[in-house]
Length: 101
Image (cartoon, rainbow, N blue to C red; front, side):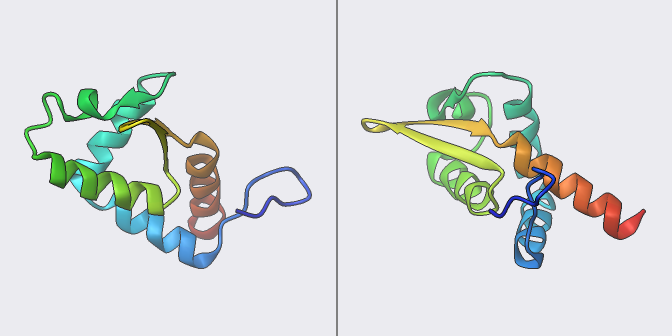
């Protein structure tokens, strides 16, 4: 993702739309809230615990969040840990403010 001269991350129109689509799903929004409450990456098994969804459904949602750039998936062997990409989320919020406020 490009960085402006000011040092801020800039998002393309396609990235903005992809993030908006990802955030429009209530379950993905809840996943992001869970990730934002933690400083460290969360193992996939912990994301699944209490979610009330199948591993395949969680995988689908995490993939959409990853494609939107909101989540980073870190592989450790056959395990995956997820973390929120705060700079991308901030860039999205800044873009909304610039475009709509």
